[in-house]
Amino acid sequence: MYPYTTPIVLFSLLLGTTLTFSSSHWLLAWMGLEINTLAILPLMIKTHHPRATEATTKYFLTQATASALILFSTMMNAWTTGEWELKELSPLPSSMLTIALMMKLGVAPTHSWLPEVLQGIDLTTGLIISTWQKLAPMSLMLTTHNLLNHNLLTLAGLISILLGGWLGLNQTQLRKIMASSSIAHLGWMVVILPISPALFILNVIIYLIMTSAMFLSMKFFNVTKFNSLTTSASKTPALAVTSSIVLLSLGGLPPTTGFMPKWLILQELTKQHLPTTATIMAISALLSLFFYLRLSYTIALTQSPNTANSLTTWRLKSNQTTFLLATTVTLSMMLLPMTPCLIPT
Image (cartoon, rainbow, N blue to C red; front, side):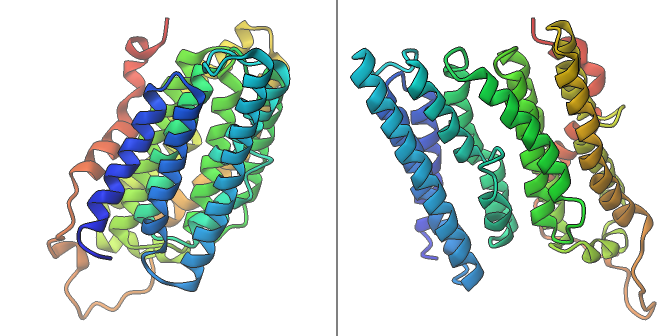
């Protein structure tokens, strides 16, 4: 890629997200989403591999369909109400917009593009799609949460939690496992959004921290397959241990950070007299926990056959920058004691 291309693309990503964040007009918000989509495409296709080309095409077609549905729903809303404001939505455009934003995010049942796209691109671009690219649609969902179809959000959230756990069970590709993890976490977010927007924001922040920590760990280990994780303990023993704890955090086990949002969401659902929804979510989370435990076991307790006639890998100094990795891993493990400070009022 040409040296000046990457800064321009990254600036465009920042511009698109900021434009959507700050807009109160549907056309401006739509433009921000389009800038975001177009800016990520060069990063996805830069390897010039057929799999990357396929992933880029799938991503573009899905996002273009969702953007067209957003534009159609907002035009229909403007025709009905005479308003282009984000806070003005009539019932039919509201349902269409809910489906379009779920497609943008990769919430089930419009989730099938996400595992295929992540599998075809490198880990850095996968990190951007799993974290940064979610922010603009989430900001629109947060702004219009009172106007969206709440029953549709709850149903889609429950399906996402179930399918996210189900898809990752027999998976051997780490990027597809992270896609399944993303789908399951998005399910928790969209269920709590109509009930407590503050908890939604807390869940998004913790999701971004934990997903970044896992992608950066995979990038540091330079692994994309399940079996390759067995070499991580011999490369960097300390990071292998902390990465296994991050995986438990993604699964929502105490006393890690990932337990906090699940605990608070289940508590809030119980307060709102929705015990059935809370029970289904808690039981469905066990599916995801299984493959997180499987990964954690592989990283920390499994070792590949090694010959002893070479210098131990962890004694060699790495040239990779580890500040962001160390920060996200630490936050993924140790934020639970700060729950009283973070509980939204």
